[in-house]
Amino acid sequence: MVKIVVSPLQKTRIPEIGDILTRAYTHNPAHVAIFGKDNFISNDLYFTLLLKHIQSDLFVAESASNIVGVIGIGIHPRPASPGSQPLQLSADSLSAPVPVITRLQERQSIWDKFEIKERHYHFGPVAVLPEYQHQGVGGQMMEYCCNIVDREGEIGYLETESLENHAFYTKFGFKVIHEMTLFGIPSFFMQRLPRRI
Image 1 (cartoon, one colour):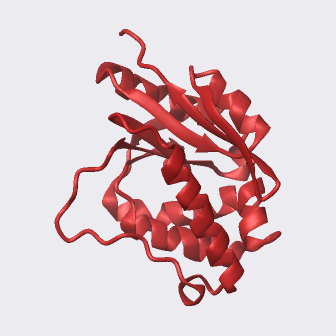
Image 2 (cartoon, one colour):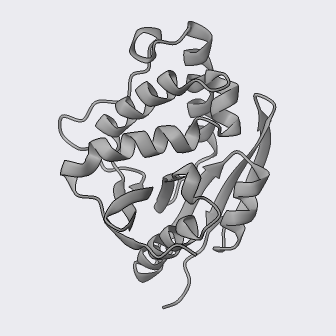
């Protein structure tokens, strides 16, 4: 297990996590189905846009002062914030063909449909650099954020698109409340009830 420290992300370090998200998600089954195999550029542009609009609190895992993982949790439904703009995805902004944008919009529409309506913490994105995966980094980040959610007595919720991730999140008390196949990929919508501290 890699020794890490999990802490809130400092805003000055936001550019560093874009590369981590891109490298971690480029081979994610859903991102391959949406962007195509090894499409690093479109993934990078997607996360660059996402980070400009994200309203979650972001936390990072550091090993020897290097960020090796990132996790976001944010209260939903989100309170309206003045001046905030919704994420706009276009073929130009992602250097991607229209079908890619259509798939992203379809996925978002389905995610919105299944997301629980009561107040909860939405987990995501969750990413660990490929060379640090399967070494306990993701687990330590999840434990850190689950403790926050438990202290506040809130429900946790997330979407995931792989059997491996489904098994991983189950270890932290998440249970499937909806399941479907999207773009040929199994998709799981998972909820976690708060634990007593």
